[in-house]
Length: 150
Image (cartoon, rainbow, N blue to C red; front, side):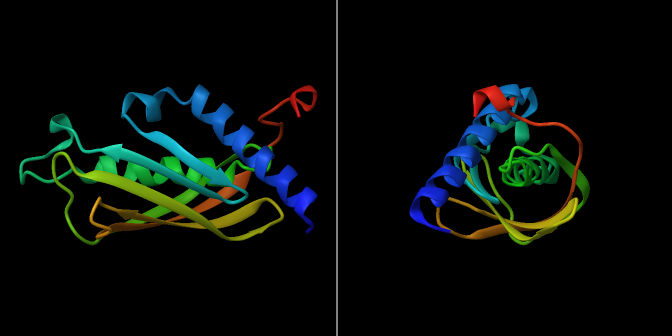
């Protein structure tokens, strides 16, 4: 790729992620913010709030999964081809606590045909690894941005 092609791909990735985030009431409701995106990549963040803490006074795993899943969704949809999760798994490494600022970075590992594989790492504000997530994607029909908006 050359610089012009790279720039076009980067802008498409950003526009697709921005549009998907605009439509994503769930991520917005959870306080998940889209920080950045690039082809096959995304970075999101979330502050662990009081209502996200379970009985052991750590962040409920469902919120960690949702954060990672959002990063996965934004990364997998950076090519203007609607893509959904086919399967996901998560491993919890270290607990997160109330007021922790969590960042989830998703990186595409493979993409071909209609499927892709993506890895997400969640870190806290001290760069401590909190969880690792793997998602497999499946491309469906349609577009995220109509051709007239490209």
